[in-house]
Amino acid sequence: MTDTLLFLHLLAAASLFAAIVAFTALVLGARLELGTVRTFLTLWHIGLVGVFIFGIALAFDIDGYDVFDGWVLIAIALWLAAGWSGDKVPAAYRESGGGAAIPADVARIHWIHVVVVLLLLADMIGKPWA
Amino acid sequence: MIGLATIRPDEWDVPLFLHVLGALTLIGALALTMALLVPAGRDGSAASLRLALRSLTLAVLPAWVVLRVSAEWIADKEGWNDVDDPPDWIGIGYIAGDAGLLLIVVSGLLGWFALRRARADGDRPATGVRVAAVLIGLLLVLNLVALWAMTTKPG
Image: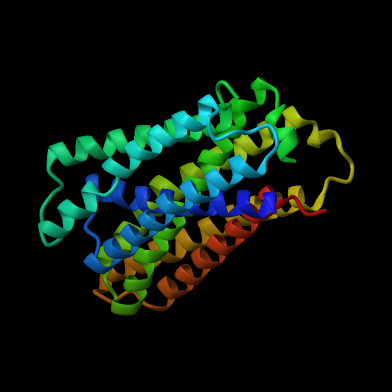
């Protein structure tokens, strides 16, 4: 059960990373079809919800972990920040009809999103105050 | 396995962080490359093919290097390099990793030749690009299997 939850947790993370790679390409000037961007936005939503659900399930499932552990609370805060900052690039791209460059302020939010996700991953590995 | 994860030495954290980061970025970059190769093979879009080749060289290849180097680093830290008969999940990881480089190189060459032909003769890239898309799709599946093996640790 725990192994399956861990696999699903990482599969959701992979889905999230696929979207982040695609959104980074848009920020760097790549022009993708709007349908492709929509697909990656769906992957981003699936990944964001999946990492949370399976992450919380793992915290309940594993002896020695608790949802009120420091690293879990940090992860929830970072997850909320990732949720706020993650879908700005596809929204801006769709608004421009796929033709214009991503505005600088949206690009800045994207790089914050990337840092937040990296911190989330570091928190998962390091587990401070576990 | 999870019990072990909770008592994992701190010195394993950096190679493990890089390994997971490399794996997730590789899967993401492969998904993007495939999403670009499919329209390039279907519609003969040279712009999509050019982007797919950039994704392959600037995202897939660096992610593969991070994954592979950190895999060796963490295997060394955990002592798997000294084991004569390693468990199946290690073997699956090595197959996905080493076959991965071959598939990346072959796909890159197919894409590059198709793009060169399109530039020289104005041909629409087709068969080679479709083969490259299949190879990248295969590598994506291989990496998802490796992700399953790393988390469930069969054998």
